[in-house]
Image (cartoon, rainbow, N blue to C red; front, side, top):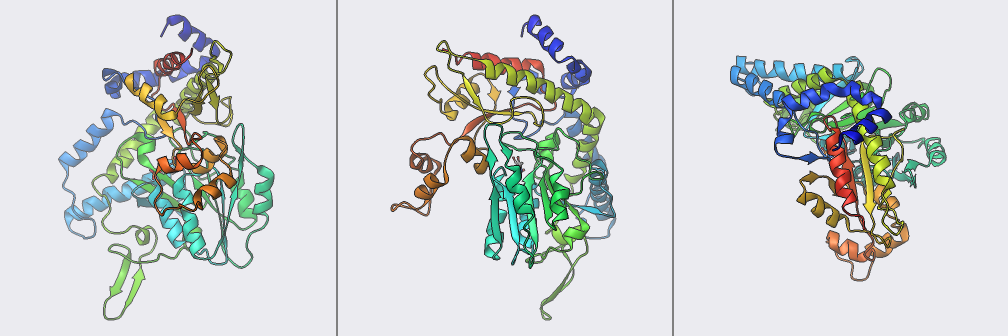
Length: 465
Ligand SMILES: Cc1ncc(COP(=O)(O)O)c(C=O)c1O
């Protein structure tokens, strides 16, 4: 990085200076990033933990004895206390009224989504969702289909990958009159980083829809205030926010919406009474009815530590850092051109910092306008210790639109005479005539610095000819 470039950056994005506390923190608490000469640019994939989070968690484990919380002995009660404290803290962190919302511990956002899918009363109802969704939201359609619900996708449009708003309005105005209606969309896309309007929540409510707001990609860099917006179901993964622990997420749900769900089974921990001879069971009240088996009671306290860590930095600081660095990255990456005048990249998503998060998704092209395979870009980046993400990021709907893969092509592909029950990603690529089936995602996060972004831009420059 040259000082000149940094000065130009500061002139253009003076508010970056207000985020200096992150540089101090990075030196102290994330030093392994620079020690290992890592250029980590996959924050949408997973956050990076601070060393102090681990130390605090370790201290808690060193100083206490925790037993299985399904009991009332002293070690069990100690575990219950830290678990319930974390549960309370989650609601406080998201400004959720405990009379209105509750937090259910899950393994990750996908676990939270599956709880909704398997329990939502879909029969005679509708499941409405945007093309732009993670596969764990798409997967709910299988429960909806199985129970006879109508499943409808709302397209997103190029170039900036916003949702077709008129189509959405039209669909929201037509809920099923005889069943329940669920509308699902991401607060922030994990493909294009578009922030979809939170105003849709009340619009959908006005027509009688329940709203599933997938906040997994949104909450790592944006404050979600559940006193201001009132989605019914909010799935999140904690490692995406503060890196550690993995294996824990939550379903934050409105109690009124949760009351509509019917769990398809019972398990240890989810019942008050179950009888073998009587062939009867009674579900527990509230969150425990959705928490199968023994909770991850040793790791759950690390959630509270992580949330406090985020609060100590502040979402305003995190947001400013992500916005300024994303602006610089977008501007410089999209301006790169080969000697032939061909642009180096094509961007999928908004080309300014307005209404978007810190993931920049592109494909790279050579000087004749021929696309580089995203796997080639990843392997080149690997050589210089840059961690980025390639593929379709488990978001095939956004990928199909971005990469121009049509419904007809997919129908042909999935119904070919040599159709097999098993399809590998290579079979799929072959099937869509070698079209690119993925892209490259560079995502800026909480502790990214100017040097990370410049290193990536230098790498990109090296692909010019
Ligand atoms: C928007 C979004 N939703 C859901 C998920 C699923 O999260 P997990 O894999 O932690 O279950 C992800 C993960 O990348 C995501 O980005």
